[in-house]
Image 1 (cartoon, rainbow over the protein chains, first blue to last red):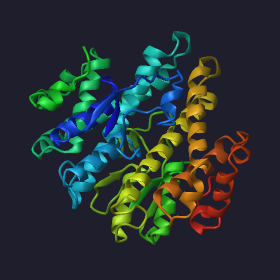
Image 2 (spheres, rainbow over the protein chains, first blue to last red; image 1 turned 90 degrees about the vertical axis):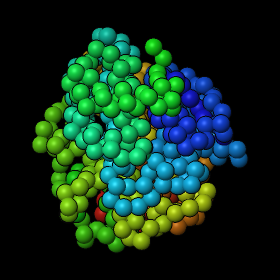
Image 3 (cartoon, helix red, strand yellow; image 1 turned 180 degrees about the vertical axis):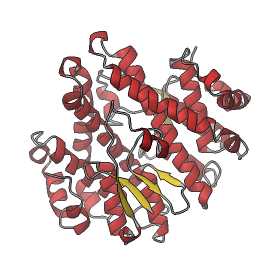
Length: 204
Length: 204
């Protein structure tokens, strides 16, 4: 299998951590791809019309798209129910938490594009404030739940939270999340003890 | 159960169609919510920190977040394997197609915000062109696959494609997708014969 990948992508990191934790990383070949908003990549558009990372390309040429669906696929390949409970209320809690965390990443990426990529004179503060506020409210939500989360065996929501916090460090190093959310800070430090999390940290 | 809802949201439409098709609509109470980028909604942020629609609020107060996860939840409630195959290659094809369609909706919404909501003097053409191009490339991808899709029993990817096309009609009525993609046009017309699709069409 091949995985389209960028070391800066928090979505690709999620898949990488999951693949290592599931013992499947040796079956995946990384395929570096560069995508940026406002910049075409016709070659990659043939694989993913929206130029999104990551995509898992199976040996038969079929694609599995979206970091979450890829983790589901890998989880099933590894026997099922490993990172996503197969049934019960926790299944829906973890899936819903994952969706919130995915939305936080989307909002953080939009903030980055607005405040760092878009031409200066075209920036709209109400937009970036709104998205930052969403991500921040998400942080507060998980700060209140992180102890319960951390008490569970590793799951896709914990991995996604790790990717959110790593992305905050990477792109918004001065935002102060560690001070505002000491529970999340302790959680991230603990997660960094895992080789899968350490090796996949975004470039400095 | 309660569903936070707006008749203009293609994501809420997806859940509504699925709930009708699964025979569960009578168990769901609609809860109208208004959200807009750049505008706070502190009340709703308590339910969903990112102010996203729709959310399913269960009778025990737990939430199920994200239109896709809600459809999965409802599908399971209806016995499972109804709109998302429970196993096999088609499961991953349909999930991946759904992800592409979800990304198309995200890009179309970003285009709308950029070209209709953002103050005129702050618009960045490279950004909206890029996102429109993504949605358009997605259209071309599904134009090439729609006959195979339409030959299957109803599934979540067909419902999502319906919501994409309805949203194109609703927000970009002059974009010319029907002429460019006659297969999708025929598909949407056929889908509109379903009461679930007809009743959920966005407001004129």
